[in-house]
Amino acid sequence: MVQFDLSGRSVFVTGHTGLLGSAICRQLGQRRDVLLWTAAHADLDLCDKAAVEDWMAQHRPEVVIHAAGRVGGIAPNEKYPVEFLNENLSMAQNVINSSHAHNVRKLVFMSSSCVYPKNAPQPLRPEDLLTSPFEPSNEGYALAKTVGMRLCQYYRREYGADYISLLPCNLYGVGDRYDAFSSHVIPALLLKMHNAQVFGQDQIKLWGTGRPLREFLYADDAARAILLALEHYSDELPMNIGSGAEITIADLALRIAEIVGYQGKLIFAEEQGDGVPRKLLDNHMLDYLGFKPEVDLLQGLKQSYEDFLARDDIEQKM
Image 1 (tube, rainbow, N blue to C red):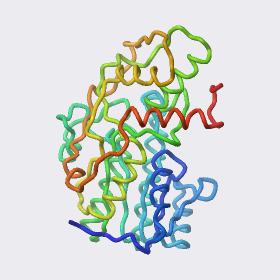
Image 2: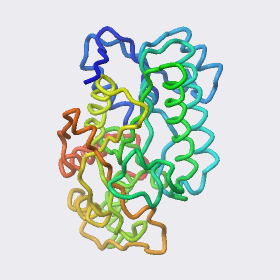
Image 3: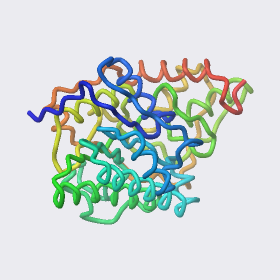
């Protein structure tokens, strides 16, 4: 099994204030033998090539985990494809190219299960990437992430760089972003049902049919898997990061309603898009590395809602 020892290394985590980046930082923070570097957007714009070059030249990290990105659900992806493509592509190119220029020993590029073709066979395997068209609703984002993965592969082939790409399933947990328009499905449902409960709404309308199947992984579990892959995986083929369990959106909504205490009627807007009907990852490589999630979906949803209630930065929450 590949061994890349993190001990004594300096590690730069991009996107450290986001859901995944903050979870990675929590995991790394438990290791006294790692020097953790982060940079706020006000201090470093990852879309600014010169700024990234200057920062890397000054700090010289040995390891880079690129977890930053513009993310969102179906609605923002469909409305802002230019921004999703340009921003994610610029960040990927700037971070990866600068990592090579400044001799980063290992780079982990965080991609997404959204890059899989719409009609790829299930469970989803990295070998099936680019075998057919993307899901149209998130094509801009998927294109940017795919270029980032390819760039990592090319650096491995041309320069022998130890750059890997990881493909996580839908993530959720402490530090998630709650926004009525741009959130992913779990925070969006938590926010909507909480507000419906507070304002006494007897019914709420939810996006799509409720029939699609999705795989969810608690962000801190994902962070543990990422660090495991960092130390024990080295190959140009991207690796999936998933929980191995799936649930329909309708059943997920019912679980969230129970946790929030909402007893109103759930109405699904079937005229709105569902995205791909199913996304289940083939996690055999992660299983081989010995990874097992520690937080199941029900426990994770409860912890997410507790975090939601404790925060004071969420609009529309009473």
